[in-house]
Image (tube, rainbow, N blue to C red):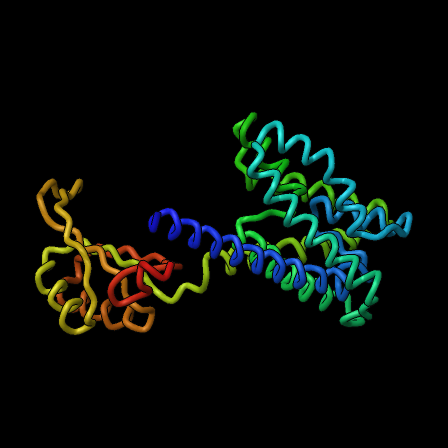
Length: 294
């Protein structure tokens, strides 16, 4: 019984956390649309982009149009992607659409700026932040991401390419509708910035570096990492393809500020060493973020 109760509490906490994230993300998105995107008819792609075009032509509320356009997409997602995905998407789409109309139609927020370039930049920032929070809440807002998943499932096209193609067509169409060649250019700015911010929200800042070292002086380098940098790592048996000899590879994760110090030591200890350095966005374990907090 205790185990079941513990599981129920864990599930409840996760559900509450996700709802808070989705609500926060929807609020940020709503403000981004009302302050920057809708006043300048900036089309970010997806169903919301089509809704802004329809708003321009017929003056219908953007949020309401998003809900109406998502109905056939929901039917497709239920058939091709399953019930769970439809439920989380329905929650994310409904909350974000309501927030868009709340800020734009009820509160009637004024323009956030008189400069369309600034509107593109800050509209993209708020849109990306909002979507990133919704995604972290394990939900979606429907639209082109559903189409991308369906294309991926049945054609082999990657989800990213499917979404990109869909958004490209919608943004490009805005130039024809608005009879303004600059309209899609602003839309591409919004799409680019929002995509980058989504990645940042989901992956976080890169404060750590993954370093992979192949060297004839692995003992000295390992000692430096352990005792001077106060970091740990792993040593894996390896075989050099070029020299055809056995050796070791050191894999370690260090803080960004320690990278220059490690590179200087490796250069001094073994100028012939082979080093690979990658960004890492989340590190769990001793010396970093505890695993239980993830």
